[in-house]
Image (cartoon, rainbow, N blue to C red):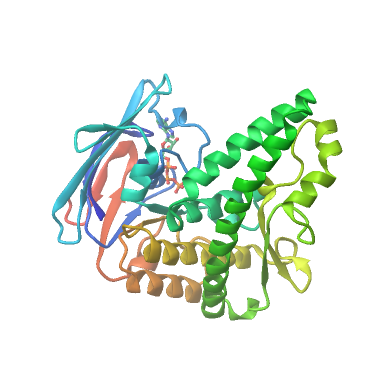
Length: 365
Ligand SMILES: Nc1ncnc2c1ncn2[C@@H]1O[C@H](COP(=O)(O)OP(=O)(O)OP(=O)(O)O)[C@@H](O)[C@H]1O
């Protein structure tokens, strides 16, 4: 599945724009602030219903407008249009998803149909971000790799909410029942996460040895959210008084993290910014590999500001990965010549001010 056509109305700086894409590599270039990232953001939004750079959706609505629409035609490998997908969002926070003219309630259905992986300036801070960021990253991967994830995750968070309410209200009677429900689902979720982490870890090491062999000593660990010397049941029993005192569950799967260490120090504290960016990229390349292997459809890849801060050799390795991959890829860059000379099968889009996009053959969209 790939994105053959994209129409944006009232999205960020785009009043109305219609773009046709080719199956492989599409590069958006232009000066700062002209709207390159916004195109990638729209593609990511289409799949996830979220922006990769804004926590809220309202800032995506063009100033002076009350709603935006992102519409796309999806094609199969033979380039035949197989789905038309339109998602609109308005200033009253109402989202409408239409797939082949039928209303869809669950964004997760679209995420399965057209998975999109975004590698953007936030992704490059993978090691510096708070644990929540790495947790979402791993959970997003588990969602695609393990089909039972969504139901286990929603049961776990339902039990956790209930438990937190009981701890807060100091309701001892029902605690045992909800703690054992929580334990059941949290253990399942922990198992799914730890299996996917092991797959991820193997691939990250593979990419580190290719991209940054000097960092091959990096040690990754899966922190499940509680002391590994005890079972979750033991921890919950030991911490019950504390949980009641603070009014919430202290340890559990909501504290999960991926820790990276170099020579016994946190990688975040000892690596250079460029090295941290490269390590981050290895996580995302591994993510793409696993999605390609397990998801029902090949993921579309968006890479924002691709070559910023990468030296020539590293940019070349990344270009080689893209050339060899079967994915549809969208890239933004300020100076396209540096990367397009190393990529094959590329369409270049020149993004100008005022939402005007020019294709290589001179057509203005
Ligand atoms: N809701 C909105 N309505 C109208 N314009 C907006 C809105 N949100 C952002 N913009 C503007 O859209 C423009 C495009 O921003 P975008 O981040 O896509 O640019 P870019 O080309 O990727 O820039 P850079 O190279 O600096 O990353 C910016 O000028 C921004 O101020």
